[in-house]
Image 1 (cartoon, rainbow, N blue to C red):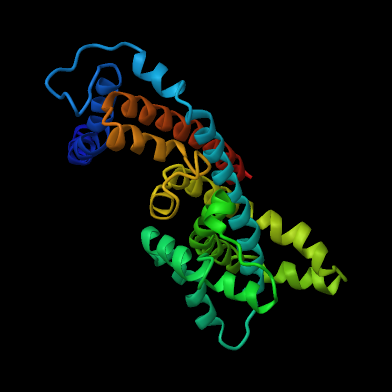
Image 2 (image 1 turned 90 degrees about the vertical axis):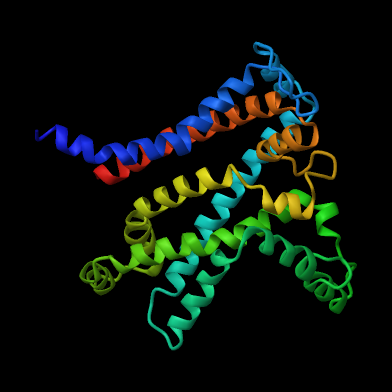
Length: 286
């Protein structure tokens, strides 16, 4: 009975998880091996590995794969470095710190589509955007960021939204530091750089691992910013694996090829999560 009762109580949760995640995955797996076009939905003949071959040999696949990893690692690097710097900056008490913390966290609450529209119209617009007005003020020629540097523009948008998340995690981690150890280091004559190297950064190891894992899982599915601003262009400059799946499914009406791409995206996410979980496990065991 000690085994039966807990398993019985867990059954509804297991069934709910299966319905929400496992069943759609199985349907995607089925569609990836059949020929399924929304232009001809009458039949679904077996198509073998043709959908995978079509997806992987598409002209946009390699640029999309490169853009996905460039976006992913760039945003993670920016958020971890700046998040650590901001966390250390507002860790010490100063007048108005509570207000500053609220203002730092607020961008994370903005919806991705709204974030993209704000950057597209208020900041990056080459005529009336803030960056254009700053360039004109200093006598420089305004830059059309979304045309000249499209991927970098997307990286700025996503980094701005995810930076508060990293900063919040790092602030929380810094609050748990041993103050007596910090005071002892200062009394022993340790400089701030020495404290940063031997105390602050090692203490933030677990928090960095958590931030990297969560960001990697969510950043692999970035879509709204690209759809709202560049539409995957110019050319394939901002096309990612997620946006490529959207193009196959809803623009080319090829559900089979899109399902094959979705399985590939799931594989990438699981491989990344596996390695990150191992890193986090090592940090937690220390």
